[in-house]
Amino acid sequence: MAKVVPLFSGSSGNSYYIGSSGEGVLIDAGRSCKQLESALDLNNIDIRSIGAVFITHEHSDHCQGLRVFAKKHNLKIYASEGTLEAMEEKNYICPENITDVIYDRISIGNMQVVRCDTPHDARESCCFQVATADGRKATIATDMGVMTDPVRRLICESNFAVVESNHDINMLKFGAYPPNVKARILSEKGHLCNDACAEELCGFIRGGNFRIMLGHISENNNTPKLALNTSLSVLSENGMKRNIDFTLETVPCETQGKSIIF
Image 1 (cartoon, rainbow, N blue to C red):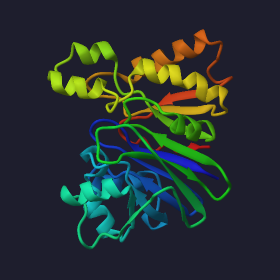
Image 2: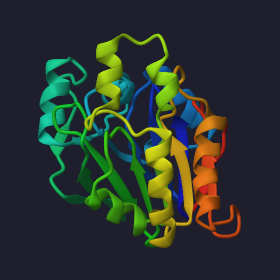
Image 3: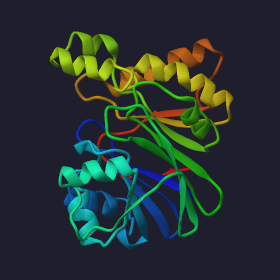
Image 4: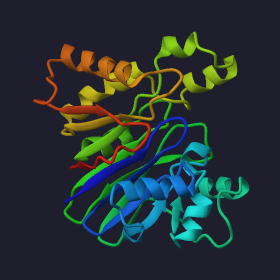
């Protein structure tokens, strides 16, 4: 039975567990070691079942707990070459941490993890698809200024995906962020807004992925309700009915002890 457990999502930290009976991997470690351990315990996940940690990019909300967590539990770290270099420079990796580059795909136990590069303001950011032993596939695709065809294909061939719906454009434009930060978020190496995400969902559902969650929702420039309603409105306009043609939810910022079976 394959499952995804969203441990944390949003500006203050991101981490997901993907696995099946007795084995899994962690995608990102963007909270403290203690918080990651507590979230895993809340969801009845044995840390010993984690075969490796995969990091999407070096921003702190994706790897701030990595150094201590990976060392304490003797976990191997996989990322792009650029991300590993950037994390070493920022002291997110200690000499005792075991690291390796994932270039395309790699097997972890009975699972296979596929890397797909993403357009983001990081050294060499990417997203990951995890295929469990029973062939079920889940993709975590956040932190990208625009959607790309390779990421689209990865999501469409998955049974479940987390897709970024980071900000509402008007909330961002008229919010308190300084102009340079607003420009970065709105750029092609920033984050997907609600409208851009909503437009993509129609293609994902037509492509065969009927189970989607909206993630990395900004705590300052968005709300879960606004992100969800924006997507549901566009999907309804395209003749798609929730819980009939697709399922759609938002990822909570903090873990709530809920696993998604896919």
